[in-house]
Length: 475
Image (cartoon, rainbow, N blue to C red):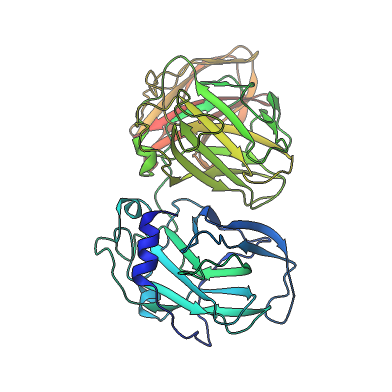
C-alpha cells in the first residue's frame, strides 16, 4: 500500500459503535448483476465471484466477494471507484453529516473486527498525506462471528485536505482490521454508499481509430495480442445502437490479463493530457455476452513497457463496464489511474485493451467505432471520399462545422437513400435526409448543426441498404 494510505489509516483510525439502521443510497456491488465499481488495487487477495460461505436471513445471495487479508501489511486496503463515466461520486456532504450512511454486508471469523472507509480525490491522494482526504473516516466493527451481518459506518472527523470538497470524491479506500497483521479470510456483499455523479456534459471524443468499413488509423499487433482478432467481419446484430454492416470480432484467450494491442499508423499520438482530466474520453461500441464485464484501456510507451515490469512505461489507465447482454452499447472510458508519471503526455505510442482483466474465461466479443487520442497529423477536415457501387460521398464541409455542414453526394444511378447523424453514444440526433428514392445525379445534403453539443458525430448515409459513413466535428 502507499505511504499516503498508511498515514491516513494511522492518523485517522478510530472505531465507533455500529448504527442499527442504515440509509445508504446506491447499491454499488452485489457480485452478481449489479457491478458499478472498479477495484483499482488491493493488498490482499480479492476473489469477486466466491460462493456464499453461509447463507442466512441477512444475506442469502449465492455469490459474494471473498477477501484474504495480507498478513504482512499493517494497513491492508481495498481501493475502488465508480466505473461509469465520469467516475465520481455526487455530493457526499450528507454522509459526513451522518444523515446518510455507507453500509455493506460482512462475514467475519471473529467479533470486534474493525473496518474503516476513507473518501478521497484520487489525483490529490498521490501527493502525500493528508492530501486527497475528504473529512475524516467512516468506521464500524463486527458484532458476530462466522455469520453475515449488516454493517453501518459512522463518520469520525479527522485531519483532512481542505481543498477536497464534498463534490470532489472519486475513490473509496476500505481497510479491514487496520493496524493489525492478521491474514484472516473475510466475505463482503451488497456494498452501498453515496450517489454516483451523473454526467450532463456531452462526451467529447477525438479521432475515430477504426470503423471496420474504410477508416483505419491504427495497426493491430497480432504478435503481442493474447486473443484472436478477426477484422471487418459481419455485424452479428444490426440495430439502432450499431447499424454498421461490418465490425471486429475478438475472442478472448484464457490468459488472466488478456491484451489486445494496437498502435497509431502514419504519425505518433499527440498530447494525451485531455484524457487525464476527462475533457476528452475514449469510446467504443461493444457487443458483449454479459453485463458487468470490465474493459480497460492502457496508454503506454512501448519502448519502456514490458510484460513483466508493470508499472514501467504505463502512462494512464481508463475503465468502462458493460451493462447489456448480447446487444450493442457504447462504452465511455473514464480515467482510473496514472501508473507511471515518468511517461510524458507526448510519449504514448501504444494502446492496450484488456477485456475482463484478472479473469481466465475465454469469450467472444464484437467491437466497433473505436475512438481515442488523435494523431499529430489528424485534422477533422481530413475526411476522405467514401464510395460504393451506387454512390460517392465527397468530404463533408465545413469540418469542423458551426451552424451547418454540407455533404456532397454523387448517385451513379437512382437509389433509395437516407442520411442520419449519430452522437458518440450511438444515438440518432438528426435525420437531415429522410429515406426516399432519389434520381441519379449530384446534390448536397444539408446538415443543420444548431443545438448540437461540441464533439464528433457520425454521418450515416444509407444507399440501397449499404451504409457509408463519415465523421463530422461540431464546434
